[in-house]
Length: 282
Picture 1: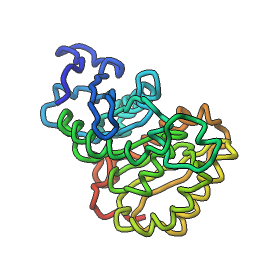
Picture 2 (picture 1 turned 45 degrees about the horizontal axis):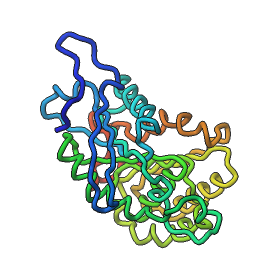
Picture 3 (picture 1 turned 90 degrees about the vertical axis):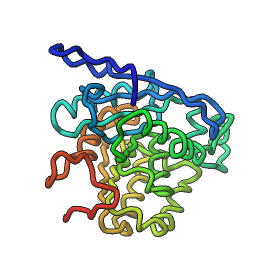
């Protein structure tokens, strides 16, 4: 159980979302470094007893990065009754370009950072080190999602294609699918075929802004999904040419989170589909 979250005394007002942040560190053997993890817990969690909740993971999850506004968005959606209570787990960056990217042979990309191509190791860190810690510390119900934008959106899309069973919900906002001359898109048809049995029941939401090096690639992925996705994969693509790369995260996160974690019409208390449940009829 997570300790140290601020909780209002009986009869007092519920703490603001910012007062429900907590942090811990992990000595990662996979990455060979210490990683700081930030956590938002839903209202009343510490006093709730045995209630269990889903977890939304996010790269770019530092307190000076995207964690605060995503946590506030989740907090408001819970307060409005749009989604069930859930946790947000933010992974603070150390070497962002290393963690979010696969390998590349493009000279301009190789010059972006001293180390690149570490997405597989970062995914192993999440799977083998972070998730077990979160399940030990928090009353997680075993349902997990991930959200990311730009290079973090690339990581979300790559994880969906390479290891779809890792999360139930994927939100990729303006994913940098141009990386390594669209290499992930080139591999995507084979990856979708290879993981066809793992995809039903999962949710994927794609967004792109007015970006000539991102919107066309995201459209290509959507076209591929339209042609090849198995029945039961719940996915959508929403181009947002009215937004820019700098505004799209905050511009779509409210809709994205509320739609991705909307309760089932048949059981409003359930925040998302069970991993092996039959998909709802379209």
